[in-house]
Image (tube, rainbow, N blue to C red):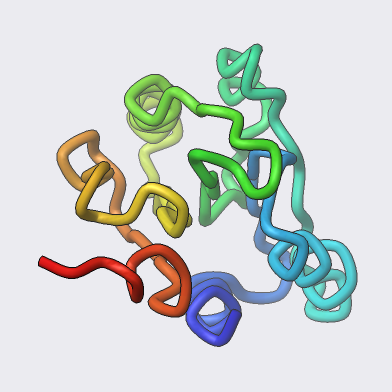
Length: 135
């Protein structure tokens, strides 16, 4: 959570917005729900079954698109490539950049490389699956 909260607070200022998928690690969800409003940072949620809604949810105030895949705890799979493509489309229309962030804790960089799919920033908990890997 230190990495996630530091990252988000370094990217967003008062009045900014985040668009996120709704299935998130509980600590992240509570941070988005309980802490960010105190900083006047609004979080909107996109249904991953309807990623095209990003076109309407991303506004000039949006600084971050945030996702987690596989999700914790439901293990849903989000189409990273589609989320990135839609975000980049809106970026071109708005002529502004949006940082795409993914929590890659469950898959780890060993099993999934979101950078290769266009994600800007990856966060991973090194106390979970990654810590138990022996290479």
